[in-house]
Length: 206
View 1 (cartoon, one colour):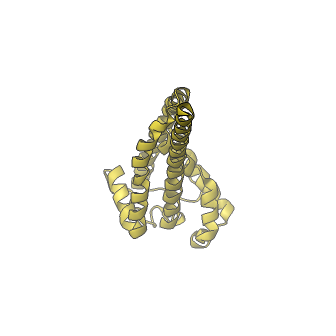
View 2 (cartoon, one colour):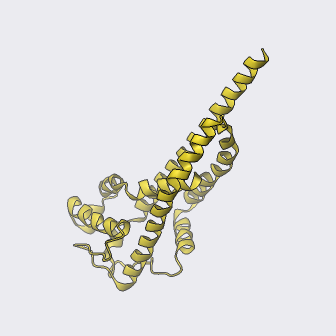
View 3 (cartoon, one colour):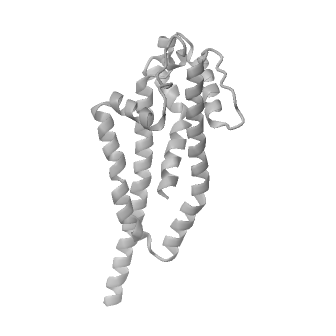
């Protein structure tokens, strides 16, 4: 269930094209790359299509050429995205089955302790990110990637100018909020079950 919530949060964040559309204006990306917002979004869709669709094997952006090392990094990112989507798909049924089972046997209270523990993780990561996002972002890449191909040269991979660090900050915040919200919802279900179980016990005693 935790894997389902995590991968769902990542999937929703990846596909939050509305967030990037807003950031084009908030972060003045269109002025930085000197390109119309609609044209930037067209390139963004091309990039997202490559990263998300298994049958798209070549990254071709109309206005942003990609270097050899840049292509390697995008390929690595594509693999991570596809793994996330696969885990999301295979975890849907077990998560739903487990929730139904807990409901059937009135054991949703079992969610309380695990959710309390896991809920700390996004908070800790968010605190680290708030202290120094640059160091957090670098550490994040070093954990996920075995090379330095993610260090883009704007002259060779101009797409990086259209993907400022603040946009990635917004993505991390969104993913953390979604994940934490899911955990809080499960915790709330557990508390409600525990409360109702307690009420039922009191009525039985009376």
